[in-house]
Each structure stands twice: as structure tokens, then as C-alpha cells.
Length: 118
Image (cartoon, rainbow, N blue to C red; front, side, top):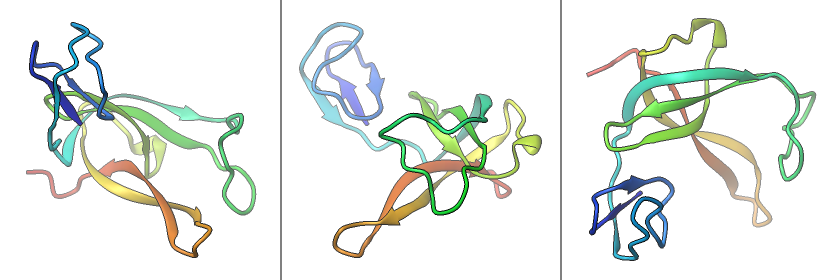
């Protein structure tokens, strides 16, 4: 993420300008890898492009906001949506998407329930 030197606002992803004060002095900041589920929903229909469906049919999945303390992050949620509860501990994970042009795996960030909450 990034933190604005003028007002202290933290953003994710990192930005070149601050949405709160329009400052341009932002520095990279490491964000927590654990937080709490602020709210969530189920993405029940296939999103429009540029979304790329995984091989096979579309399967509904959780999407939510995870409060990391300094910032609330919107993310894909892994796990059974029936088990999600507002306030539950979540941890960062990587979600494999598809093979890249060079054969390496393209991944994105996601959050899943943290059974080992600290």
C-alpha cells in the first residue's frame, strides 16, 4: 500500500496521489497480512470482461472487505460463503488464476478464514 505524508491516509493498492487531500508525497507501506471481515457478499453471476473464468463452469464465490487496521481492502474470499461471518479473522493468501504466457502461474491476492488467529 501507500501512506500519504500530508494526511496519513493509507491506500491499497498504492496510489500516486492521495484521494483525501490530493497530496502527491506518498510512500510505500507494508500492510498487515491478517485482519477481520468487515462485510461480504457472494458474486453469484459471471462478471463482465476483463474477468477470465477458470477452466470449467463459473462457480459463485465470496467477495468482501477485510479491515487490516490502517485500511479496508476489497478482496476475493476463499472458503464456503455459508461460513463467513462479519468480524471473523481473515488471513492473506494467494489465489492461482491461470498460466501466464511464459508458463508461470498468474496469481492474485485473496483472503480466507484464519483458523490460527493471533
